[in-house]
Length: 98
Image (tube, rainbow, N blue to C red; front, side, top):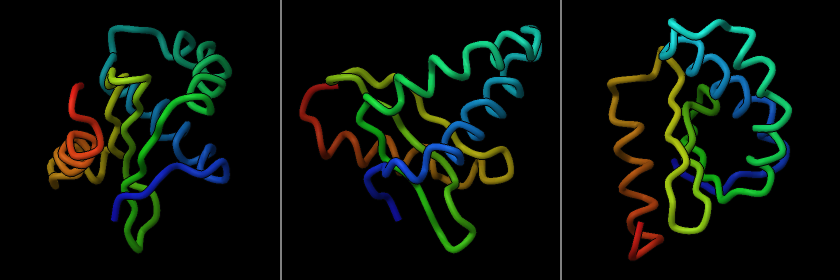
């Protein structure tokens, strides 16, 4: 299920963001992402965010600023299951111009 972000989701969204960036950017020291955490959290609270969720909890999210997709993030153990595509297709239906 895809739904709008709620403030109560911030811890899980930020954990997915942090874990995904550390995993995808092994050439960047983890401290870089950890130092960006607070700034990104503030941006996420201002952005348009949609959550992918199932009985296991939050599996991923997509963030938009205006009509710009700032990022799509999926938990490592849930990748390659179509969650990112579902999130992308969802926002494409919400916005005629991305």
